[in-house]
Image 1 (cartoon, rainbow, N blue to C red):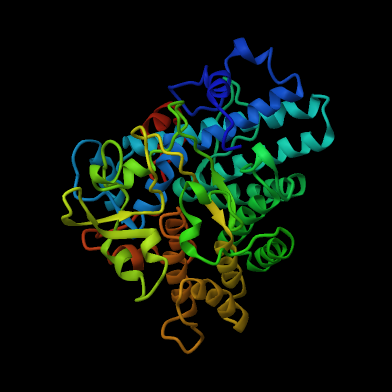
Image 2: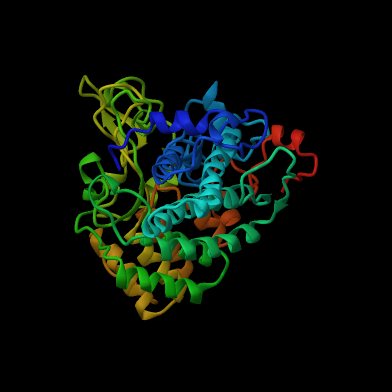
Length: 459
């Protein structure tokens, strides 16, 4: 799938989207009558939905802004002018409903949902191979669920639209838990319909393991730990993932879609508009890559200090300094997980890792609570990092120790903000940051949505 070209797909499915309200109608009336009539149409359509995950407002930039920069893991860095000001406000909880980064995350997320809704609405009436129909339906349910998970955690009360949007429809907000309960239903079906793995050009598509991992995360968020345990044990027993022996081997273009990887957003360079921005966004200097380095998503001092001495995860994850072209050591904290060699600015081949097996092990420890087995699971992850075992006698509560381990293991992978919320640690952790004096659990719904939908209320 890494090599599937999406230009035609996006042109076919993203034209006709409204720019004036929540994008819930993915195709123009001109195209709709002639499309979704044959199996190949749905393969084109689902690939366009995958392409939507690449968008700047989704995994391209929006989600790390919402889930990493919002947390204590990262900040904007020293630049607080122009575009950077929007990130600084998000990091400091001072953004408002006009923040363009949050508006982009909202609109581009709903655009992906719209594509999935049309697929799920049309596919039952098309004659095609039942296994392919199930697979495409499962993929659409997974992608839609992945987007709704981010929106629910980020915005709280949001519209839940499960069918194609008609101009006469009224958008109705539902609360976060209602969204998550719907995701339990959808992801259960997706896991049933999806294959365990793929081969060839389809590697990178959603699998049973991807649907089950998100399902477990949703169940933990709902407080349904026993149900989450059942799902997580199924992933471990049946879906063939393993920890790579070397943490550094998780990262870089050559290591994508490896045995630990459960789901990645696939990017492809080559000047076709499908490359990722991560290398340029996260690098602190032009000495590190082609074009400008913006130093965005800069690791905080507390993130730097979270790594224990000898933790083998530190060097592959982040740096505290770099050496410039003249050999001078420059102090600049920066994310390393998404570095790559670029031929063109903002056109990296590097994927974004959404889920991997270490997360499954740590989620199972969370579902179990403090037991010998849960410490064994945590220590399996720690030992890979070159660190000694911990147990009940190690200082701190079990929740604090697990939350710490999740922080350093999964740094810069968009887990920190949901983890803080799920563990009830937002105020305790975030208010410790020097310049933050108050927190807000949810982002503002974009002002344009409030203007168009007078029935909406802010959280």
